[in-house]
Length: 175
Image 1: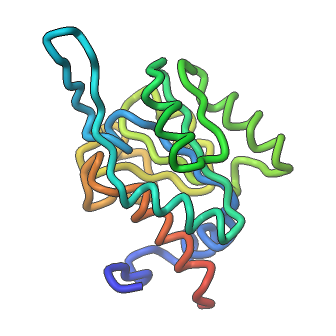
Image 2 (image 1 turned 90 degrees about the horizontal axis):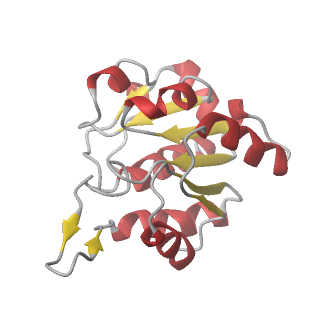
């Protein structure tokens, strides 16, 4: 796949990426640009990247589970997850690590087989627990210092697709 240089990913992480079976993502600041848009009537809007939706289809074909774990309780998140047919969407959850462990157990997996994409300090515990952790380029400094890979993309610019492609490429290309 053009655009990725697996040589920039260390051998250790390349091997981890080949074993990934599930991808967890935060929403605000990852699948969206983190902005909240309000109308005069008080309606809220979030903008998602269509390329992330296609990533879900590609992951499904490769038998890799994916979904959302977010502290936000917005029904917009549930609607987006259903529309692109994610395997799960957990909203209003502050203990992301425990919920990720529970989801993994339901699929017969563990966190070492997982990727998590997060962007803020409430994501750090799960970022430290998964096999491969990553964040958008505009994540907070503390998160960028924690993860295995910092994307060149900002939140809402298709980072979920980038990471999905990276996992799929690692699985397709033996070292």
